[in-house]
Image (tube, rainbow, N blue to C red):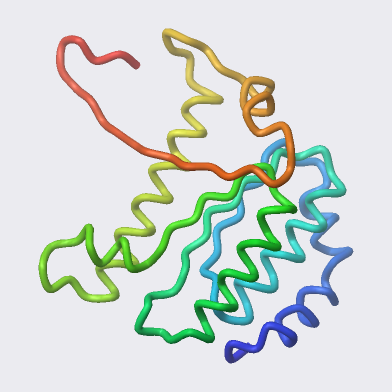
Length: 169
């Protein structure tokens, strides 16, 4: 959409019924988007509005633009994030500037995007394992829904790995 949020909203609106048909029977929806432009900022909002009409627990993982992308993209992302927070059960925000700090010295933007993909993938995999894999403490969809029971939730996540003799699965 060339960064045009209105154009993104129009495009997404035209497929609202089709989106509903795709997601109406889902228990959990995980939305992943980059905010600050027209596509992610608009389409994610419309999809979350549609999802709010279902019984699904809706979680969103969103990236915010780099500082060097300018104040316009930052403003669009902040507005989209605030609007989206009211439509989902949990919003996980990941500032791209943080990714540059976490990577090795001299990391490129592409490497930062790879790190974002890795972090979001790990978070989603952890969620799937929590819900589907038997472990010491078994969790299910109702446990997830008890944590994310209301719209507008602010959420944080961390992912860790372990191995060895005392590893707990």
